[in-house]
Image: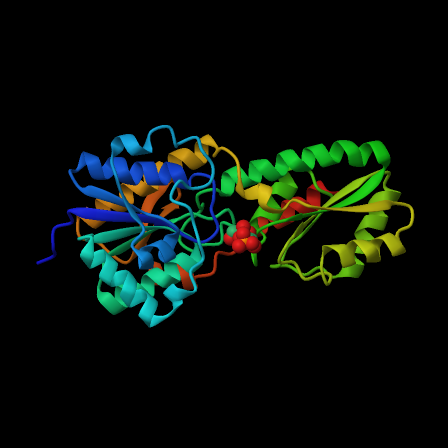
Length: 328
Ligand code: F6P
């Protein structure tokens, strides 16, 4: 018979994302609701290895739903990649009498979780928290919607100055190897071209397209470039090439960077994070383990953690087509 879950640990790991606090809050309050103790683990897997724990209750997570970042802090632990590190983590959990873990993070977090559960048969449940939206088995990850809005706001501002000076701007956005942020924010902000890792259009096609839009009467342009895109060496090299071959424009580069990860989460992220976290605790309580909570067609789903890491979260072809139509 499965052991009754009496104490749940929660951690955030990898790149932080807006809405992680909403998820922590919902984990803690759902635990309280079901009379389960909850423990916060600081600095992700590194804090787990070091036993950096704090007892949490419904009141300790007050007023955090609106805050960006993560009150539990986050880290990318090298030590947890080793068997010895994971054994130390397991010993800490046994010592603290923790029966199960909620892991809030992205694919690195889940990769660690899969290994850990396999080696120690310790129940884990994943909640997808990353601005990149690059996780298989869920339409959305926590923080993605907020990051999109942050990027669109930033591009709107860049647009004002680009138009005033008749300039061509390359705006680099995050997303690691995936183009979700670039594609969606690019469409939302009316970018003239969008470069993503999933589709290498080639530098000359880009140049042609920019020449065409110049001919069509455009006086300024915004090109959104995903950080993982391989059209040029990097965004600065790309801009240099276009600058040299399209002298009609003055070319500028703006790298948005980590501001995309900060800020108060959108209502969408807060609600989704809460739904996912409640489902995570309830699933552990009911004896499930080794899953990630996903959202598909607005329904909560349990996706095997291994699939969430290995599956390919394909880019929406319809959005690519839309972008071609809208940038005429
Ligand atoms: O995974 C989230 C993310 O922000 C990526 O978009 C980006 O490539 C990476 O993290 C940056 O990581 P770090 O903050 O460790 O530099």
